[in-house]
Amino acid sequence: MSKEDIRQMGLSFGADVVGFAAVEDYKSKRAPDPKTLLPGIRSMIVLGFREMNGQLASEVGRISMHSRIGQMELTRNCTFHTAKALEDRFKVKAAPIMPSYPLNMAAPVMGLVADVSLRHAAVAAGLGAFGRHNLVISPRFGTRILFTAILTDMELKSDPPVTEDLCDECNLCVEACPARALDEEGKTDNMKCLRVSQPFGIGGAIGYIRKFTAATPEQQKAMIMDPQFLSLYQASFIGFQYECYRCMAVCPVCVDA
Ligand code: B12
Image (tube, rainbow, N blue to C red; front, side, top):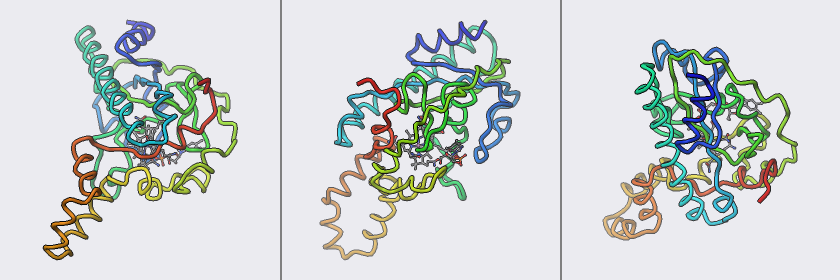
């Protein structure tokens, strides 16, 4: 089975781009050593899925989120089916890594460092390069791309890296960030980003529970009908729900629409 056959398999299940990284070329300072995740790991197959232009054109978080939910389903199905097809046909080990959760919620990482840093995996697999917004820019889809991966014991050589500097340092992402989370170069201020991008995330839930437990029974009655609580309830079954996509949306690299 050649890399080209595997690439075609990923594309046929719905990926827009597929790249390969030998495990030695994957370098994330903070994510764990991949050998602790899959014994005998030799390579990573990285899949990229373009984000919808309509999703990013809307200023309404819910409209963007409709697309993102579809996108998450596509990425999960495609990554799982590609991994399963590899195991079924070639007697190899293939462990799919989904786009976001589950994450290690224990301290000190508390959901902020994934088991596999998909941006570093994408860079190692020649699918893009980091930009000023600390996101990976693809030569084909710009910043409008999400990644998943498959860890495997197959021996696959890395695809050639993107050596071109794709970020034109226009600073639009920094200026457009409503949380000012990108002011410091090379670092995203996670807490600032989270407060704006996930108002109904875990931080919002903890704050609400604290307020609720300190409230009087009368106040509690009102709090159960509060839109903030109803949104938290909705997020509890939708999963991570982003209200902000600005750093992706304003990046002009490779955007035709
Ligand atoms: C936790 C998480 C978050 C957290 C923390 C982000 C963070 N700083 O790591 C929060 C909630 C804040 C977040 C926000 C967003 N996220 Co997020 N997130 C993740 C997740 C689940 C884990 C990231 C992780 O492990 N980080 C810890 C490690 C990687 O950090 P690190 O080694 O220290 O590297 C950091 C810096 O050192 C720096 N860096 C490292 N090397 C280099 C090299 C250069 C040259 C430069 C400039 C910088 C740089 O960039 C990193 C980020 O700060 C990944 C999925 C995954 N499994 O990877 C998605 C992921 C990174 N998120 C993604 C996206 C799209 C977003 C948002 C746009 C939200 C949205 N609406 O979707 C924002 C963007 C914020 C931003 N501009 O940084 C995409 C990025 C796709 C892409 N094209 O790069 C990912 C890969 C999800 C996916 N499946 O595609 N995210």
